[in-house]
Length: 418
Figure 1 (tube, helix red, strand yellow):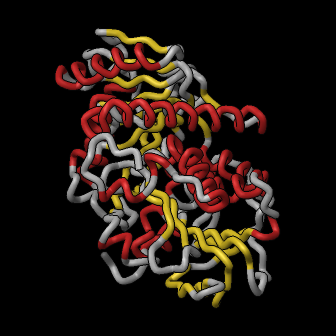
Figure 2 (figure 1 turned 90 degrees about the vertical axis):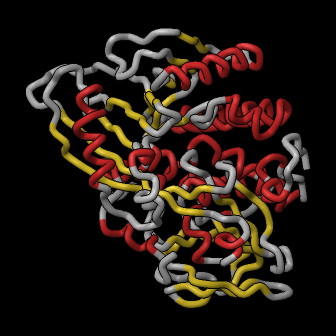
């Protein structure tokens, strides 16, 4: 881990989804920071803005909340992802059964569906743009087909939601090993969604890099690049960058960074290349994903499995090996025979927990004044709302956070319930 927090590298390029929005849609930062604030939220990404929104929904005053971000709202992973809102977080259900037993897998499946529905309701209320063709989990080979077929059997048992399973794929699919289609899943502009959350919360934000904090009996003193801030309670919503704020996230909770490559392709001379419609697609255990935007541009990314070691980093930047696979192998399979030009390349940093689920809780030895919500493992859109509800329930009601509670990492039982 580098001594300098690489989160500041995010300032070098405007995130893709933020660049798709009109200028001036992001509220400006406040210049004057209150001497003391009740709730200081470190990180203005999906998690931080969701927590601010939930606190206000629970009766906290927006003026009692301040978000602080090293670069700005949506400039981290939120503005650089694929914008997929999935009902099962991209994992096959047998994996959940193996790790957490039937009770745990059922509950996680329920929570993921709840998260999707909360995002759906909010997006509809706000009139946000979405692509509503559902998600397609495309099996990359026969072994994956067996796992997803098992998932399909569990989905049939566990939900009455609209979905379907097919043993074979349409000829346009890059692999012909079957797929599962969740009709209720959808795609969004994640930056537009985040700014709507922030706007509805009414909470202000300011710019600053948090480097350390000191918890005292009645307050927390937070050191930032803009000076010290004092808060009654601090919430760390820094995801991959949590280890730079508190060493416990590196040594005990083992939050680790992973880079993801994304490209954008256009099809010159093709008036209508709506090959993929309004669906969102992922394959090979979620390592490959793509969606076609309304103007015909194709967004595709992932392929970290082509160079896991090279992508195990907190630093932004291109990985030539992964990009070569995306551009010369996967893209031609998705282009329907049309010539494609890659017009943009970017990367984002994911924050993985030890078991690929987010963790929430209070940081030990802080007098209960510092809490956290991190480790979204590439599925922030699929879990941020349920994680935020779990954390705010803990902080406001002392309610047990369930399967997202950090102590889950200490237990070995596959049927841990707290």
